Length: 458
Ligand code: GDP
Ligand code: ZN
Image 1: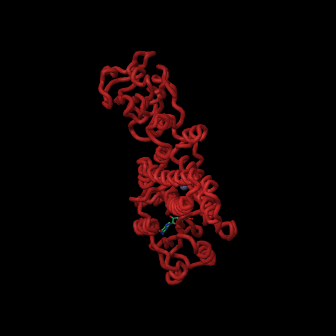
Image 2: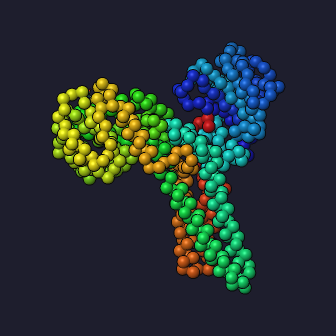
Image 3: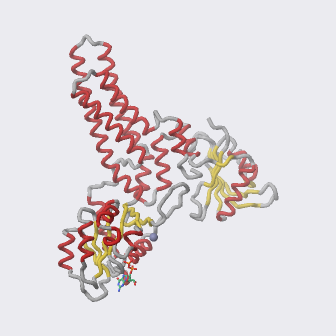
């Protein structure tokens, strides 16, 4: 296992007043002590923080005033000695401190390497490690709490229980195979297998159902703002972004469309998709065709359809209403400060029960009503964000789907009356697939691949 000492800046670049240089490894304390002027870090108790200065060994000058936390193994995130150097002097100073630490023999950590060590030292399991990654990427508060919950180990606990159930079933079958002379054992095993596979299958199905919500929480509700030219789409986007402080975190290695804005509306994460094709095109239906526009719209979780109070409805509006009729949308009637030319009764008819909000974006009126409508749509589907264990990770969802398939194969085998030692193969496969979620059977390359996705410094 790793024996060298790694270091990295562990706060997001450009964010916050304080930046932290973190070290982990056997020499974390000695490397820091080497360039630290203040208390003798070798003598301080574990988990204490100390004021002092980092001295540039080349010039003997003070590089930065710092607060240094010393945390000794094993009660640390990585289970190694960990030192965190808190700097206040902005990015230049932090980088200088990092350089000094590197010059004293620490190695620059790979992305995710701190978390990888935590995993390798048994401090966290794989699903918890991935939750850390989600946490780093979490764009809004709600998404954050889902990630936290997963890190808390709830998903792991559930998966462990399911695996235990499957294991017991398999063990039972083993007994049966060892004592084939007892007919009733065979019969009982078949029944037990049938009951257990059904139960576990049901739990996986439920997990997959909440997975979608988890994904939305993590990635934000894909929200498209549509409407004819000049109705106020850009104004709406700007208003939402300004009112709800988009939390835009630049994460190296993620290929995010640049024309997206993240906002948190009453705790609901929205990914405002600045669908160039839809938002700015003169006439979406004319230009990209009804079918194509329908496709674009289908990829959205929520549509904000803007109409102009000051204009009569047009054919285009009718077409747009048609294109979105099966989707979640909110009608926004904007420019209520101007003279009414829109037929409201007709709009209500076309909207067929979907929420309608009136705004005057220029006067900043109606925005809170709109936010309320958005929150209402999101929480309508009995999404109890407090209690559910969300599966918000793409890899987990993939594995759960495979596990579900393997169980269905087992169930089919049982229906066909196949011998239990054949059915057992699929059950064992399910057990393995579930194990991959928590890292019990994860292969080395998978682990490397996963951890390389982390941000530097985590
Ligand atoms: P888009 O083409 O749909 O993106 O529309 P814009 O957001 O660019 O707005 C078009 C024009 O309408 C701009 O001049 C806005 O200032 C104006 N506008 C937006 N909202 C309102 C409103 O509530 N009332 C009035 N009177 N004008 C508005
Ligand atoms: Zn934008």
